Image (tube, rainbow, N blue to C red):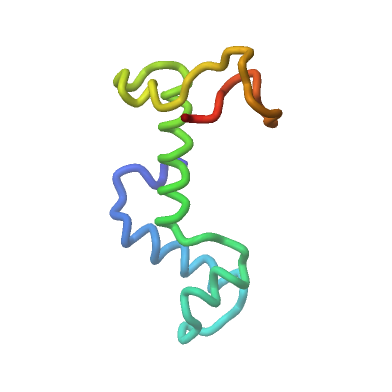
Length: 94
């Protein structure tokens, strides 16, 4: 994990694709999409985007972001209109 800190994003992508080529034994002419399909990996930018969203939602949950972001997800009252999987934590935005 610490290997990636401070490394250029393009270099990370190239290393990831090179490792996928080694694992799948595909030639260098194989497309990136096919490598991701064969290995079951997702593109690095998609992983970074999803990770950033999860971190932001977590920070919103523990109130460490500006208040206008915390207001977008409200802590529930017992006035939930319908059953949800996590009704004890969040209400549906209005």
